[in-house]
Length: 87
Length: 200
Image 1 (cartoon, each protein chain N blue to C red):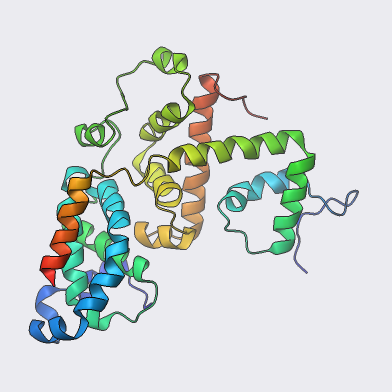
Image 2 (cartoon, rainbow over the protein chains, first blue to last red; image 1 turned 90 degrees about the vertical axis):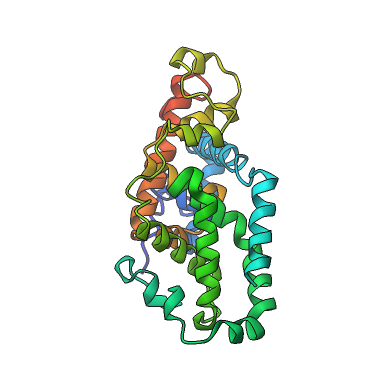
């Protein structure tokens, strides 16, 4: 049986330490255990501290992602032309 | 996708220009449209990862990668194209000795890539900044290269943990650890600047 770190007093929820341990995987959509994903979602809605932690890391992820793909167009044009000429 | 170890190098996957078992004209005739159509969407990610490895030489590294991938296209098994290309890129970087000098935060090359960042900014300057995104970017540049590359591969390039692990040549658990520590350091910097609350 998989140990989901469920809280015995609140069967639908999990302990904060379990949420913290799995938070990065949860935010990256890398958790494959659907029961655990649901439990973490539930916990983040109910637990203010963990919810704020998740919100902070989500904002950080969005901010980091906003930096991406900002390549200068000339470089991309050159590389696409290189690919065409390679053929 | 066949497993390719770092030590196997490019030759192991048949991407060495001189080791192709097929004559180039034959490859050109048979695989030209498929190769271009498949590989072109991956160029932005290749370029970004290449910049993580070699900074200003990234464009050359991508060109070498495209060339080797093209030569080895007949041996590609059709699965996990991105991981296959990124493995070629990583091995090419290693073979060129570029990985021994990853782009370090503060390199002039890095500054050129992030013209809106200023590593010369004092902590006080950073604290006065009210721009969350700008502060995150500056914090990312302050990470050690191992942490920064892992974070960029996942958060910017959208790679899975497994893909990022393949690119960096480390176990998935190491990627998870680097992500966690890198993001935590960013969070700590933001907390020091008063942009977010401190630790729970």
